[in-house]
Image (cartoon, rainbow, N blue to C red; front, side, top):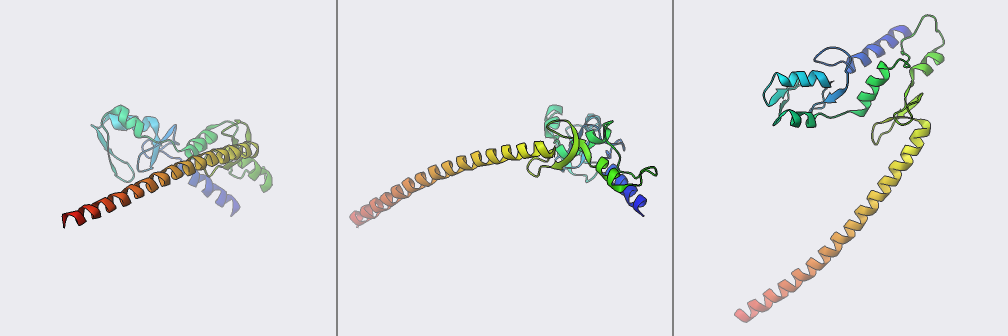
Length: 192
């Protein structure tokens, strides 16, 4: 049962990483605005057969573009998908399929969990950053989280400063509106 489950996980992963155009594992995966992903080259060839619009091969979403450069600018990079494809294509990546010669699940699972860290490039146990979706080793992840925290703190300080500016302007405008209303009432009183 364990062998069967491991095989189905690999098949599931292969299915997720399969390009719906060439039916192979994606190379340089790019996502359309509908978030369906394909090989970059497959999308380029797909577009060359059309004139300023295509339908997504999966969901049939109609996508219009002005020219080829505009189409290319619409293509999104999913960092997790990109890194998964790169990791699986890497010679250093160990398959998670159970091998008859390796019966120790802990050894197999440890090898299966290792891939290249986005930051240091070393083959290590990785975790996904929930902020930017990079796959990072524990050491790089700590530094990355400090940087994300620092950047978030800086952005929060900027937002608080701008909020104070907006509140100050609102207060000034409220005072001017009140003055305007007083003048309007006085003018109406004189008109009677």
